Length: 192
Image (cartoon, rainbow, N blue to C red; front, side):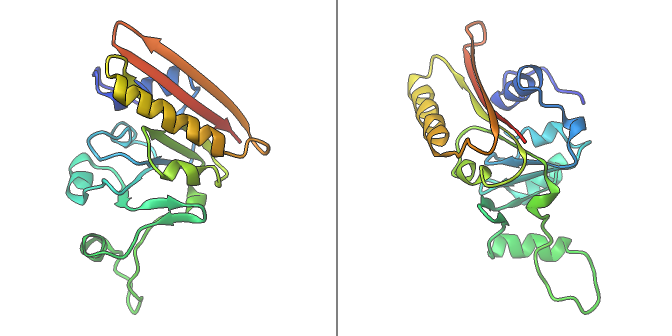
């Protein structure tokens, strides 16, 4: 896996979870990424693996441009949800497998196909990630100089920590700062 040298938060967060969070894409049969737009996703660096970007920010033209799999949707406690919409209809009708006499439906993967869930940033999907039996790598990479964003991310992350059921899983939390790059990293890692 080749990761470009960049100051984008998605690149820095991916490097952080690999180096500090023990995230190794080779160890997973499927990687589900939540909440990002296509250009700010880490999925763009995981195209040689089975990855899937699930977000309300997904633009289908950009998915094809970047060569990654995904859908405009969200994660619920019972699985992946891609709501019926004109945007989703247009994409999935054009890209649906051609099966004779099959009723149209969105061809989306099951949550059981993913043994890793990754998310950089804040999204409501995080609260539903704790319902799934997968390794979880969630957190943020934020500029230290942007106090408003930093405080917002810290609060959202603490809210998530307060909501998860830690009795059935082992969690590890890491927080680091890199003053040279003006970044704060935070990662909650759950190992199944």
